[in-house]
Length: 325
Ligand SMILES: NC(=O)c1ccc[n+]([C@@H]2O[C@H](COP(=O)([O-])OP(=O)(O)OC[C@H]3O[C@@H](n4cnc5c(N)ncnc54)[C@H](OP(=O)(O)O)[C@@H]3O)[C@@H](O)[C@H]2O)c1
Image 1 (cartoon, rainbow, N blue to C red):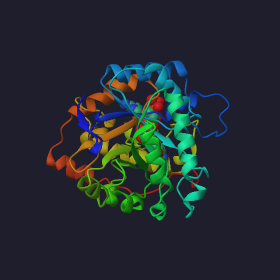
Image 2: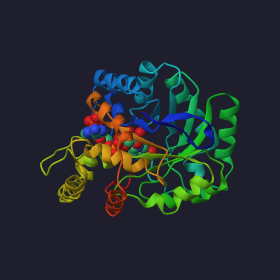
Image 3: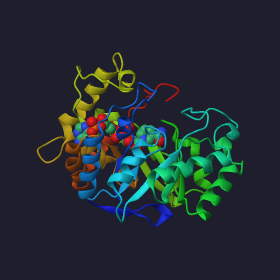
Image 4: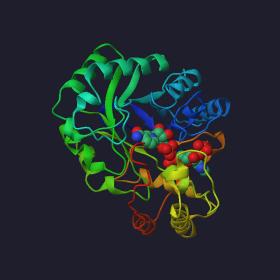
């Protein structure tokens, strides 16, 4: 595993991080039928294997199974050197951010209350507390700043960041430019390379840590899907109609050109996120321990200049997420 310092936080984090959305699916009585399905004992084995293989950065959220993902992390990873990022859900429960009035989404007292719930679930100080959506239209309101100050002072959270709206990296430019946050989390993968245009150069200039989420495009860039793959979660819609075929065809083009005995498709996709000009950390979702070793080894892959040019040419902008997820 390779490690890096995450922006100005001084936290040393593994360049492959663990995306803990999926493991929240083991919670009972979840109302959203699009949620990932997960089995707790397999999830715990996955967390444990990730730790043994050098992954020390875990991204979760209060919303992932109503705290279930956070509680599993607490149970399995009560160890030194673990860095945990979690998120405050928007009060209006709307992804992406649409309300211009931050008082309806992240009022000060609500941020503090939800962070304390996460603190309790995790049983420890939160290393990075992220707002689960962000809009630059909220920048001038001081509620979020005041909440962060209180939480820092009370030892609930140490550093602060935002998770940027799907496929809309420019929606947090004002915040990043201000240098008032420590990290950003954004969709970044072989298909959506848009954060490299403006967001990443600015974040690097301001020493804001960059966390790449959905590095495998919800699994397609693992190279394991076929035209006949079926889903029992939100991906039924994400890959609905002709989208699965179009996506598989695009992934097959990458496989044909770059996969060989030394590197699998998932490894190519993860290493792409970590190339110069890209992210500090790629958080890959895993509910299955069998994924861990392959993903961890991705940091060792090397590309020729020509291969990097080819990967850059695979940019494909689209938004397959439903409006309110
Ligand atoms: N708004 C937000 O803030 C937001 C939104 C989305 C995601 N996130 C964060 O980003 C993380 C990553 O995104 P994601 O989990 O949605 O998508 P992802 O990492 O792009 O893909 C996850 C999928 O890839 C599969 N996978 C992983 N490694 C594999 C391998 N080596 N071979 C084959 N399949 C493999 C996983 O399978 P299994 O699960 O079956 O192991 C899972 O189905 C999340 O867990 C969460 O922490 C944040």
